[in-house]
Amino acid sequence: MENLEIKELCKEIINFYTQEQENECIPKEVQEKISNLRLQKILFFLYGYYWKENKKEITDISFEAWQYGPVNREVYYFEDYKYNEIDTEKVTNYEFNKKYNKESFEKILNHLGQFSTIRLVNASHQTDPWLKTHNSQIIDNKLIKKWFEEHVPEIKY
Image 1 (cartoon, helix red, strand yellow):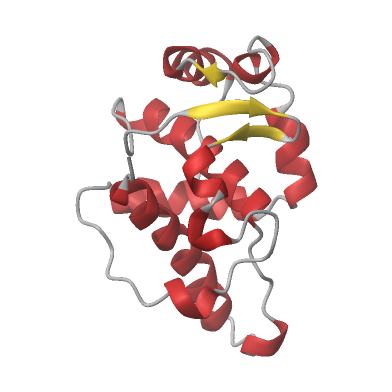
Image 2 (cartoon, rainbow, N blue to C red):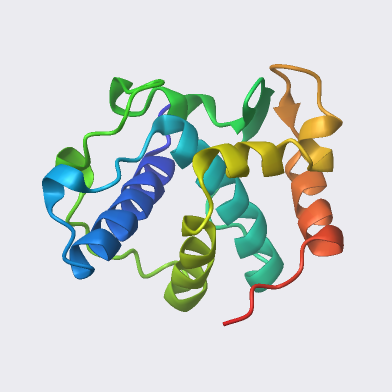
């Protein structure tokens, strides 16, 4: 079953980073593209940080333990990009979904944006939720929430 809420969240993440680059006057042809791998890691950390800050899920989502860290299978097949860069032209110019705490959402994405994709992958490999889940198995969201509550410091700005 398709979860439109997850797709909307992904589009908002992509739109946020695209807009950040446009605000910095970076020409479209040299803007950093977002790979599905990067989107997956941002989504995982966004889920955990958002829970820690707001004590509610940003969306109903599940992650599986894959080789390169937590992955949402539906997002992996998002617009059929799989392991390719995402065509931001198709998914940008979204109005922000008011159900999210915008300040928290932007603070978390700003924080995560400073890390390379490989650093996000490596960081995801240090989390108990990924370490304690067998390959291709679903990671228990309770484990994610507990780990972020107990082991991740708050983002300060």
